[in-house]
Image (cartoon, rainbow, N blue to C red; front, side, top):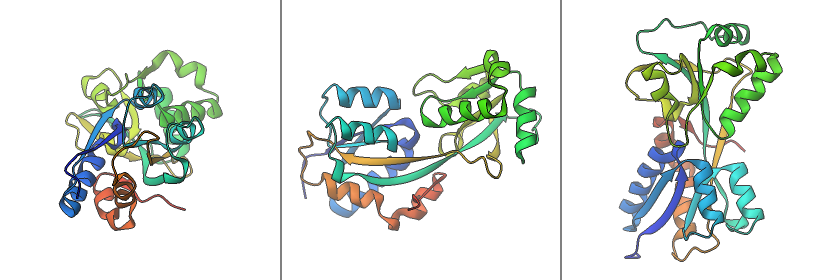
Length: 231
């Protein structure tokens, strides 16, 4: 058991699930894991700038980039959760049909404003609009959430009529109504991966990451609207 806390950084999408995983690890080992959650772009920038962390949790492509640049240890990488995009409207507002691809396309075209997030899920959504051939027509109505700001808060305030973000970040937010996940064939899923930082000093860094990525934590992850990574 180490008396020193293990220091980690993550994007906001995994803030709550990592907090519970960290607490479970502390209960199992006595070692505290302190996770700072910020916008994913900011987290990656801080790691690239050389700030000292033991663990880094980000979308898998961001972790791969950090590994290629030598900021995290490539062999340490572990997929921790799969996080899927869901949709929401303001509480009490009419709920559009989003159950099929055609219905969702109509709902997007009808929405006065569309909230989406930075990062891979937002990029995938914009690519979907391009594939539908509506990217230019909806562009003036897009509202991108600032880093670290939940799309759900934009929906609750009325700034965005229809919002898209990971289910884990929309769950349990007041002032919104969840419409559910993306319709069949349109799922947008981001795998969040952890890695030991190149400058890690804590002897339990890899053990803590392995614990958090373990299949034994599947039920905990599902309670947070996430799944165990496939493959």
